[in-house]
Length: 308
Image (cartoon, rainbow, N blue to C red; front, top):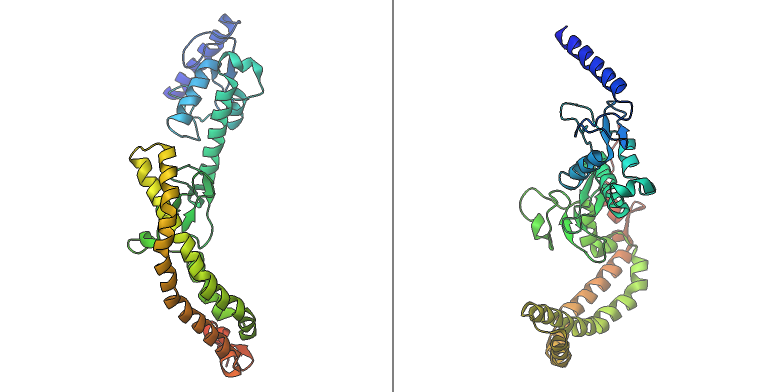
């Protein structure tokens, strides 16, 4: 009863205030009469444009909040999304007096971005470097940002930046099935491809491994060494023209240093080619390729169940 009486008295005072101040209503925050105001549709409070813009800017920039409460400290209601869109409308030239259009566009963009993040809850993550939003992809926990200027790799489960798979070796974070599929793609290709197709690809695979493999090592080895050299020189504060000159002079030397590694790569590439040839031939044998008309790999992956 006491609460109802207080509410009734406050309502009467509000009506009397409206009658005594026909030129405008007092802002519920600064208590100043201002013609430029907005009536919040959730609670009915009047707020001047200056106060509500400052209020919204604080909660968006400083607190990263989506559900912004009323400017009146004692009001439990939240500001409606349409009210936020109205005071941040970039096409409303009348708002230029209170806040520049570029600032309103920025706040509106940030608010909508936070709204998406809030709506998806645990189904969305941010890149730890550029803060880009990513939705969950089933089976993929080792994520790389698609932003060309970022390319940051991070763990989907803990949102920590990581550049290698060592992050998943210990702790609670584990690789997803899609991550394992990407790592074991070659093994999956060998297991699930028919033997006749492997035989067709045999000349291409052997040529690529034996001839182009050492050439690839000969090119990539000095390239990565030069990249490390340039990063070290930048860290020492050397000017760009000095770094470029030294890198050009160093590249032929690194090419010569890469020759032993290119030749040594044949120690691994030749056995890989022989192994591919062996697997292709074995899979062409009916006893290994199919069992009772079912492909051998399906027999292993999906064992039959006897129905009685």
